[in-house]
Length: 262
Image (cartoon, rainbow, N blue to C red; front, side):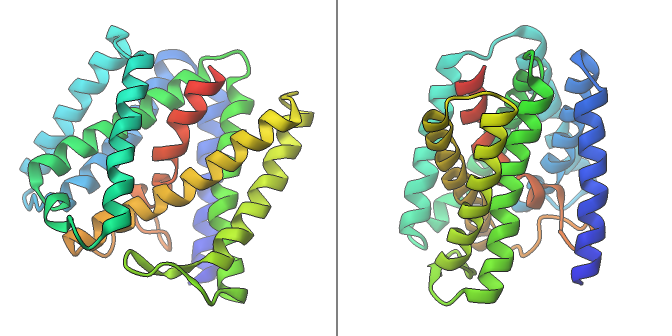
C-alpha cells in the first residue's frame, strides 16, 4: 500500500509539475478547470447524486460558472472576503460537529459549497500562475501544502498519541500536525528567502497561516465525509483516493496565497 502511494505520488508530482511549468494563459486555465471538474464529479457523490447523468449536469454547471469567472473577470477582493466568510462558517461546523451534521448533508447547500470552494481554488491557482513568478510561487505553495500532509502522515505514525479532531478524523494527531508543520515551515521558509526573496518574518507568518489552513482543509473534507457517510471521494488515484483527497488542503491555502501574493 505504501509503495503504491509513493508511486502514485511521484506520478502526480511529475504531471502537476509539468502542467505548471509548460502551460500558460488560457491553456493552463483550461487544464486546471478540467482537473477541478473531475473533483466536482466526485463532490457530486457527497450530494447523493447516483446517476452519471445527474453528476454530469452538476459538473456542466460548474464549468459554466468557471467560464464566467475566468473569462468574465468577475473575481475580486470582495469575492475573496465572501470566500473567507464561507470558510468561517465551515470552521464553526467543524468545531461543533456532530452538531450541524444535518445542515452539512443538505444536497442544495452541499452543491453550492462544492461550486464555491472549487471555483475558489481554480481562480486562485490561475491567478498565481499569471504572475511574473507564478511557476515558483505555485511550486512553493504546493510544497508547503504537501509537506504539511506528508510530515503529518509519518510523524503521526511514528509518534502520534493525542488525537487532533477525534469527531472528524480519529487518525489525525497533534504530533502529526506538529511534525507536518515543522517540515512545511522549514521547506517553505527556505524557498521564500532564497527563491522568492520574501522578507523572513512576513514569510514565516504567511507559512504558518498556510500550514494551519492546510490542516483545516483536510479536516473540512473529513467533515463532509463524516456527515454524508462516504469514506472515499473517489478511486482515480491508487493509494490516494480521488482528486478531492489530493486538493482538499489547497481548497483553503490557495485563496489566501493568491490574495496575499498577487
